[in-house]
Image 1: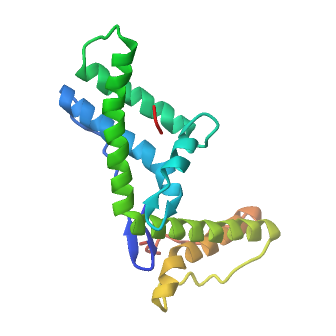
Image 2: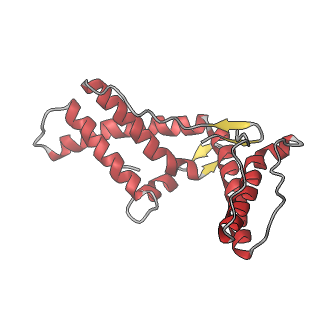
Length: 198
């Protein structure tokens, strides 16, 4: 997904294949996955570019909205622990090993989020803005409101660029819905370029 808000750009890349044939590669992958799982709760509440760690911890604990992320974190931390240490019969030693793995990853994730807080905040605003446009579009479709069929291909200003693609999509969605309702052929749009603690 690529989105723009006041010239900010972000993207997500998915790697379908990764060489995990060594212990080091497995633990490195697990560490990166833990950072991804933690970063959602950490990014939700930034105060002047700083992570509200108390808020993130509450969201990751039972009753919080990110509790499933924390379940994934716990499992991955244990995988790293089991790949790093031998079996321990001492519960305190075992917990210390988990903490020694988890706490540095927590701190590293906080540092990363705070270093990239400006991009995260503006991308969040972009996604929120586009979500509101889509929500209005769906309500308009339900109400039978139509739109201009021109499907604009250029933004007249930088401020227009942020909502250009969603505005065009809104028009296309409405027309496709109308066409389906009345048994007509849908409009041809193929030529449109769419650019916590353990």
